[in-house]
Every structure is written in structure tokens, then in C-alpha cells.
Length: 134
Image 1 (cartoon, rainbow, N blue to C red):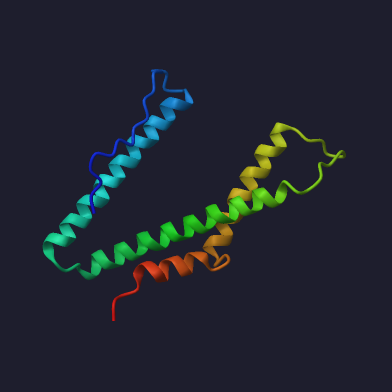
Image 2: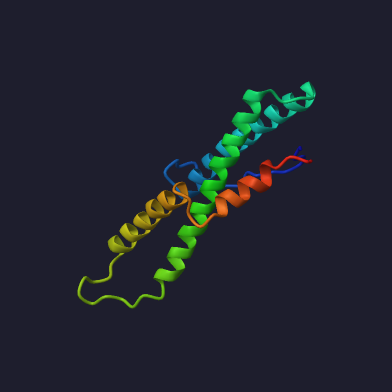
């Protein structure tokens, strides 16, 4: 598995590290470093021919973590879209601070739901990615 000729870096003109563009660049650099580390681990495993039990356990843990994160992201999207259908409440007002609080609450709620089993999406993804050829 190798990505050749892919340029994941967007072109940004700003040099101020507090700008959103600089944060995107920083996140892209971090992502590229993680991608390179994963590629190196895959290459080492392929060269050796057989993965050790420790490598298999680490791979399965990484797959489980990614599956849970994906389910949490899906659930948060689901909650956010459902919340849009709720009428605005005149009693408590409707301001930006409440929207931020609600978004943070939904994010933590869906993370906890996914860790506790959620709707089964993480289990399904994990099982599909870790099944062996029989």
C-alpha cells in the first residue's frame, strides 16, 4: 500500500499560526507523519512475511479504535441533523454559546455511546476488517 504523487498539503499563504489555514496545514503535516509511520509498519510486516502476535494485537487495537471513532462521528452527525428539527426555544433563548455547548455535549455523548456499544457499527467494521480468509 503506497500513495505516490499525492500532495495532501493545501497551499496556504498565511504565516500566522493562529489562522485556520495554519491549523489545517499543521493537521495535514501530522496526518502525513502518521500515514508515513503506518506505511513503515506495513512495509516492515510485509518484509518479514509474517506478523508477530504483538503486531497483530496492535493492528487489531488500532482497527478497534478507528472503528469506534468512526461510529462516534456517524452518531454525532445523526444527532446534529436530528437536533435541527427541534423548534427553537423562546424560554432559554438561542445564542451561539448554547449552540457550542450543545455541539460539545453531542460529541461527548456520542463518543460514550460508541465506546459502550453504540448501534453496532464499530463492531461490524471491526469484524469486516479483521476477518481471516478460511
